[in-house]
Amino acid sequence: MSNSAEGSSLKNIISHCKEYGFIYPSSEIYDGLGAIYDYGPNGSELKNNIKAYWWQAMVRVHDNIVGIDTAIFMHPTTWKASGHGEAFNDPLIDNKDSKKRYRADVLIEEYTAGIQKKIDKEVAKAAKKFGNSFDKEQFVTTNPRVAGYMKKMKEIEDRLGDALGSGDLSAVKTLIEELAIADPVSGSKNWTDVRQFNLMFSTELGSLAEGAEKIYLRPETAQGIFVNYLNVQKTSRMRPPFGIAQIGKAFRNEIIARQFIFRMREFEQMEMQFFVRPGSEREWYQRWKEKRINWHQSLGLGAEHYCFHDHINPAHYANAACDIEFNFPMGFKELEGIHSRTDFDLKAHEKYSGKKLQFFDQASGESYVPYVIETSLGLDRMFLAVISAAYTEEKLDNGSERTVLKIPPPLASYKAAILPLVNKDGLPEKAEHILNEIRFDFSVQYDAKDAIGRRYRRQDAIGTPYCITVDHQTLDDNTVTLRERDSMEQERIPAEQLASTLHEKVDMKYLLKSL
Ligand code: ATP
Image (tube, rainbow, N blue to C red; front, top):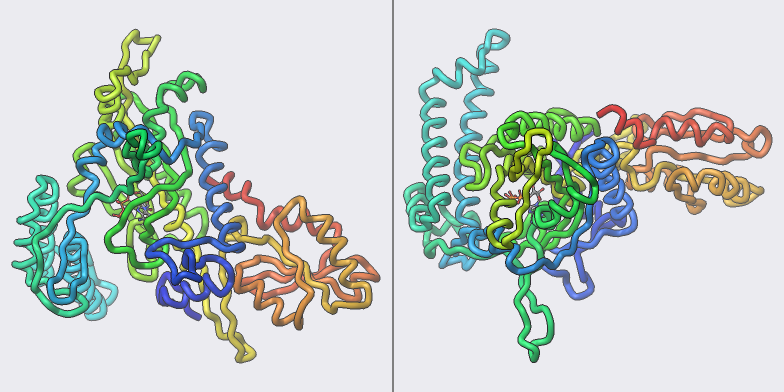
């Protein structure tokens, strides 16, 4: 058995997603469009369920979080205030021989990831040698070779952080040269200078003849929340601590768009900005770190697939920041960002708009600009996390093989499939009758084509947690078999108990209650 978060290749997952109607390359008949993807019938169901689980965990479960849905186009001054106009750049470098373009910071990070691999190897070797008495902490701090690697890694990270922080692009290039980093494709070290590249897409509002205004497709959903802070606070009668949640599209002209839906040019974000009294932000930051990791782990994809990566040098507007990383098929990478953004955004919007964005606390008689804790999760990355942890190739006892998506049942595209054993003898009519009884409770599929074994495999491949088979006995005693996807075990239950049995197993409310 292989589980993708450990082993299965991204390639297998991409082709499975396409073959089973989860994700297609966009405009595929025209050979696709770089880093843009379309969700198919099964994919959009799964995506909607992920959205629902996030939205309900935020908005329905918390009395002090409300949701909004703001426009993709925003007043251009928004991006001056947020800093995206000036600073939303990636440092780019081209290789003169291969003509390939890279993010300079990513090249350096891949170099340090290589050092980390060497450390991990030394640790694994020592752990094997010393057995039970092995103390990792002690080994890492005292072994001269490992300590040397750690020191080197820290030096590189500090230099990169300083260079990017101060916008010193020539220092980034020097670092690449000193580390003798070569183009991963051609091996050449013939690099151009590092240049900044703005990631925002622009277009024009109004016709050119009228003197059109340049506007941008939003690169994050957060600013729609900030500019509406006062509207929402007043109309929802909220007082800090309170949050505003939003799910929506964001657009970034990513330079290196690789790794399927991990890095897209058009993607969706699920963001929540939590407004707090200045001074209480550290406490709320910790709380949101805990809440968010609990949300992820409630899905049961495997606690070992997540880790926190605390930022040593948070962005200029943040006083603390971390990522929740997930063990994707290409390794541990950012899934969600949690940032303590101070009052940077609201203050900047106050400055650029000339409007006060403050909270008047009647109890103390003082006004203040709230501090903000942000949780920002990429919906598509979450989709990739779910599907890559769920993707399993299994060898069965009878020698056959199956590919099954072990998707958490509340997220699965379909909760059950109704299958008449044969497509005659009144079984289809009976099956359709049962389908019509439960289709208003759950999303269910009906499938009467092919042998029953093939139909089970089809449902396994799209992650349907239960198959309900209607056979000749059903006509006699109104019982059906219920087959569970992961164990493949079957039990016989009265058809009238189907809805209540399924509710217990697939209803999202039990996940929400567990939070
Ligand atoms: P990265 O370092 O991977 O470029 P980021 O730090 O720029 O990501 P944020 O600006 O913090 O990302 O965005 C919040 C979340 O939005 C990320 O954690 C990620 O899940 C998602 N996200 C960002 N960029 C993309 C993208 N190009 N495609 C898909 N999801 C993305």
